[in-house]
Length: 223
Image 1 (cartoon, rainbow, N blue to C red):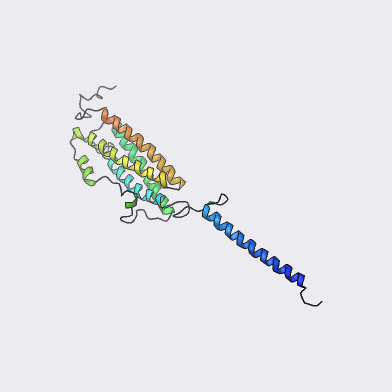
Image 2: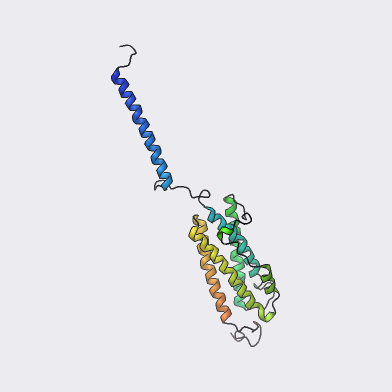
């Protein structure tokens, strides 16, 4: 019959191409639906980049400088400046400075790995409640406090500062997606809350105007 196609063969080939075309269209449709719904076989990438979203980035950009300021504040009473504080206060301050310095380095490294700036553009914190910070005037007030008032002023300011860190951490655990950032936030929430409880107990255990080194201090007779 030469090269002429038989009608039955032509019909089969046309039908085959039609079936393949329909199958391809169905496959594309299914892939589109899976991508839109975050199918179980291949989860969609989180918004904001591979493995993190804008809240994760903002959390690190806001928390790193806040903790850096906390390091500066804690060092006012860590024993290195000779300010009159009880040993328990000095130990707590030193521990806070050490822990937060390590966390600041980790957060800075993570932002570099994500190829994100260390700090956000001015005004970008507004949607997240603004940038929490302890005012320089408040820090100066503690620095200049008389010896018999320094410890109380220091503890009150640091309590407020650490509470801001707790609020930032809870923002991340509520809206963040990155596992590392969420774990860091959960740890910050727990540790800062514990520090606040410790500082409140330290405030309650000391008379308002008692000097930590005074012979009349309740702790001076402790063996």
